[in-house]
Amino acid sequence: MAIVVVGGSGRGVGKTALVCGLIRALPEIPWTAVKITNDAHAVAKPIFEETDEGQKTDTSRYLAAGARRALLVTAGDDTLSDVVERVLSECPAPAGVIFESNSVLGCVRADLCLAAASSPFVVHKPSFNLVLEHMDAMVELAGHDHVIEGERLAFRLKRMEQISPVMLEWVRERLGTKGPGNRDQGIENRE
Image 1 (tube, one colour):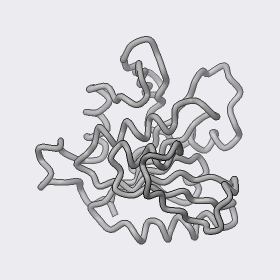
Image 2: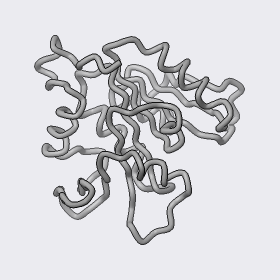
Image 3: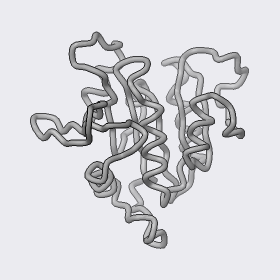
Image 4: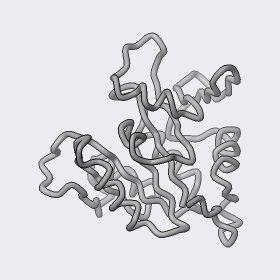
């Protein structure tokens, strides 16, 4: 099972758009997309499954992008590990799980961790430090698609919801997956 984490420096940096872009770009993976929050969102259960892609929520956007399942997990630091373990146990291989969260990195080992950020000069939320420690690449909005290879790999995208060909090739290599024409080969078992 492939585990991807998309974290972000704050609100409005494109985390959800990036998650949706990855789901669309990797249709060969049967995704379960999970948004983790510590806000109550007026849901009684710690795991809410979205079933309507026509809503104007992040989880409905996941479904519209092609996710097989979309979950909203509401959990504090004290219960997050148990809830995430439950989500993962319900996603048998060859499924992929993509988390939109910073804090989930405290309880899972991601096969790929992407950091969505707006600017290095903007003050980011404290939980983003965990993402910075684990990230494989930074992803930021820019006027055109390009890659910056330096101390840390950075993909600059014209639109967060549209993964560039170079980034897609890199992501597929990291996850050990083939393109949609090679569905029978699927993804490597990374458990």
